[in-house]
Amino acid sequence: METNPFTSLELLLNDIKGQNQQILIALGQRTAATEQTALLDTLPDRLRSRDIRKLFAISSVTVWQWEKKSILNPNVISGRKYYKKADIIKLLGEKGKL
Image (cartoon, rainbow, N blue to C red; front, top):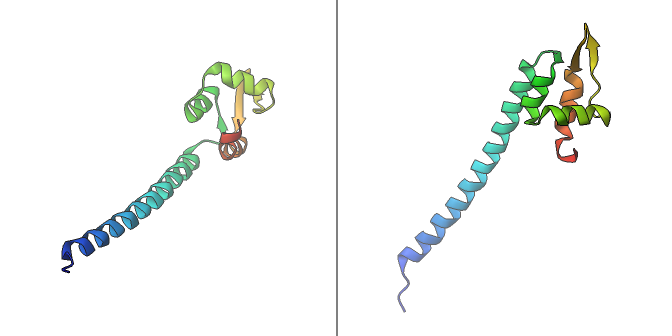
């Protein structure tokens, strides 16, 4: 019985495609982590509510609710609320738990 030479090539190509997908997924995850790290490096030491809303894609009501639940603890300076960068970085790590 003759074996089809294309069958083994097809199996080899499918294996290579699977490996390439795994590599691309890993690179995508690293790229996202690198982008987030770069974003965090550019943040000022104190952030305003609008910065928090953009960063987490949330509304001002959610910011207010997080303050009431003590998830966010603002510092008031000259009547304006500011949030510490370190607290925001910690929140980003816990984002799935919010």
